[in-house]
Amino acid sequence: MEETLLTHFLLTQVKVQHHNDTAAVDTEVHLLKESFDLLQTLKTDDNGLASFKLNTSLFQGSFTVKASVYKMYTHTLMRPHFALASLHLTEIQQTSLHTRTSSSLEVQAEDRPLVCGAQETLNLSYSIVGEGQGQLHIIYLLLSRGNIVKYGQYSNYMDTMTRGDISFFMEITPDLAPAVTLVAYAVLPSASVIATSKEYITTKCFSNEVFPKEQRGGEGV
Image (cartoon, rainbow, N blue to C red; front, side, top):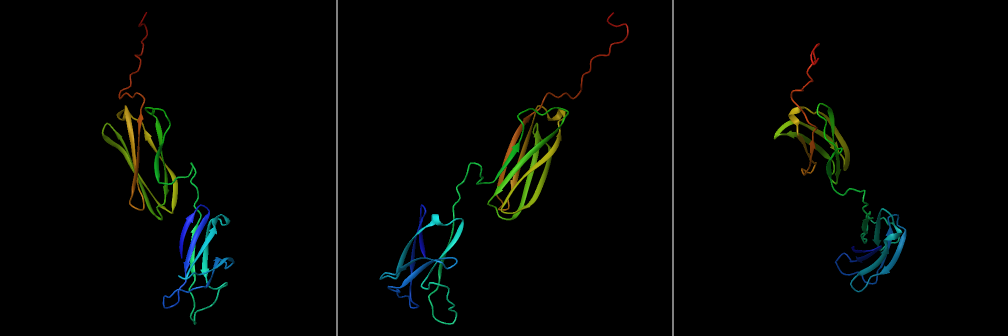
């Protein structure tokens, strides 16, 4: 069965042959639903070909069409017969602006500097599409002044599509000033790699805090 898909229409051509590969001329061919409900009936031409035009807008989701010289299911195991041809079709869903078509790894961050001396939360989000089942590995590194100051990894067994978030804490110490960079990459089940990074600015940090001089009694009089 050969097919050409136009907008809302499927042009289908079926070739019917005898066991010796000669064309079955002027033979009725029935186009059937999966439930064997009759859709159309045509006759083959001199080349054994029968062409159908099917309005696909009458169907939703996935469906199967069958071509047969028989109008209903016939048990033909022990006698000569014409084989059944079938074609499975799936409706193409339009992609919306909110539908992801590829995998992504992103840093979720507020637009503000990291506060020196504070315990900050850093967040990653991931969306894995079209990978099939397998192991997902995410590795993250925090770098400051050319050095790795923190690292970690996360693993998860995923199905066909997986979404999730990873959070970890980081104390912002003076050795991280004036900036720290988060680098993360994910190794997908297909062995493909996706990556992301984000630079954070820190507030001013001092290694040695300076306190106001304690005023003694009688001073400044």
